[in-house]
Figure: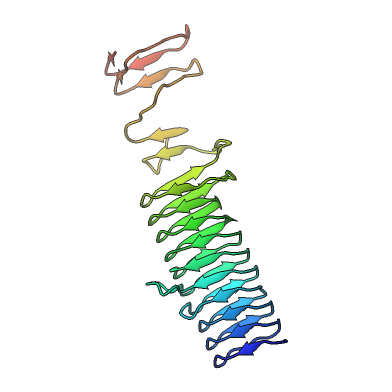
Length: 232
């Protein structure tokens, strides 16, 4: 309990070294060189972490050099949380959360970073995870692999992911533009691609017909049905 300093009313510091509580009704439990300026805020067993003055009812649990920053912003990071990790920051982020990791930022209301390194969720209701994933628009979700490059989703209510090793989806059907897919891939709307390759001898049916610049048939056993004709 050496060199701890309590300034706020009804605040406590049960243990630790060189911790300071300025806010009222706030607590630092153990750790080293932490500072709580906000009221009704808590830091548990952390080192060199800070909760700013207007970040009321926020919490830092464990980790090192984590900051919940009011920044003088519109949203002063009320009810925000950082759960472990190092050098993570919540700013302008009422109800924002960072779950561990390193150098992550949650920078708007209801934003979240689910661990990883150098991720940013700066859009309202945004989410980021992985490495250098940036969700900068409202409702944007960005997931990134270990590649050391920024991956940014800057379109409102858009999901994006970067996984250079590929994607594996198992166990059910996938729908694009529908919540009730009836096949392994069900698409409602136009599909545009550079080319299409069929790898089995199963029958293909094109209910709306087919329009193409060229058609190359190489299988002697596969069959296709064009209900509305064929336009080449």
